[in-house]
Length: 195
Image (cartoon, rainbow, N blue to C red; front, side, top):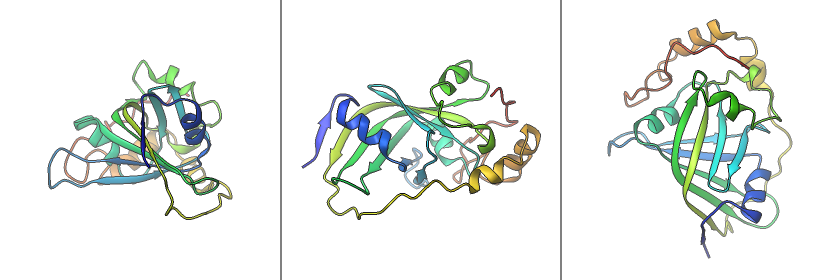
């Protein structure tokens, strides 16, 4: 039932751009390290950059496992499920990197997300993923669910922060600067926002 694709084009691109939710999976090289699986949402925070490259905005949160794993080994899988319409699951297996706020590429990448204001969300980095394997599968067992709207809690919570207080928040969390397995996470101090 599954099919492998050389590129993210046509129907695949349309499908993943329409989904309000996707998942990221990463793991450290250590065989006994912690596998991380995270849901990602917020309309406008994901973009297809070209037919082999996607990116998403990495916002403030309580840990930085994805960032830590990507800094160590770059491996990442992204997954989208059809909760409405025809059943489908698309996975992009690839190599990712966090592009931090002080990286010269950051402003140009951020311009690729015109439909979201990153300021109230404590934007930490932009995760860029280069696809090595693109596959879809049936998704027959994925339930029907409806999307009502994005929650506004994340934006309301982090809109209260400026660069100084956001940096203090990150420093106060146990698994931001260092992952659960002791890997380097988000580089601190947080570079100032230029957006």
